[in-house]
Image (cartoon, rainbow, N blue to C red; front, side, top):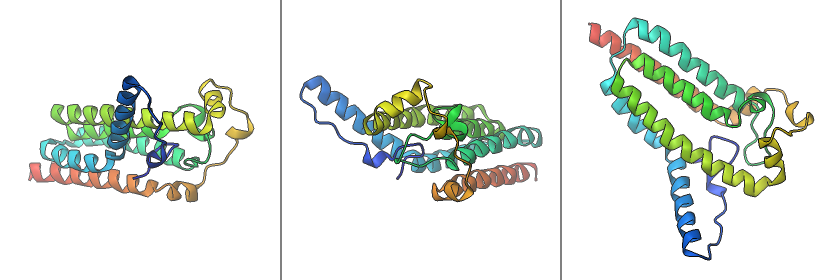
Length: 202
């Protein structure tokens, strides 16, 4: 599975290790890559558990679902600027956040947790986001540092050129980055939470 952010996790290079400590670091990096790639299947598994424990109410749905849509909106904005693995993207939300897709995912997850109306769900969502997105960020940054070197360091330090930040948003680019999957996912969860509220109140 491709990385959601600026890199593609399956092309992060393996670095040859010469010492035991370095070998341990290499093994750790391999597990981080596997965990980052497992975000989607893990998300489906967590989604089933979340639905089981959810106890949505009209008030919580009215608060949480708009928050989730704001998070997805940030993701769409980021995906419409991102050129994965080809450059250090610096336009759109990348001028504000180093990892706007993951920020959007976090906001979306928080909104769905509120809508679900369950402390258990909130803890599950928090655990999923912290574990998987931390792995994704570390893997992605390692790739970008290796692939783009000085350009990525300049971006991290806020020394991006104005030309690099001038790209316009593109719906076609967002769809090419397969953001329609996340859009479909958040809509399906929203419908399921509404259905469970109706079922609980029936």
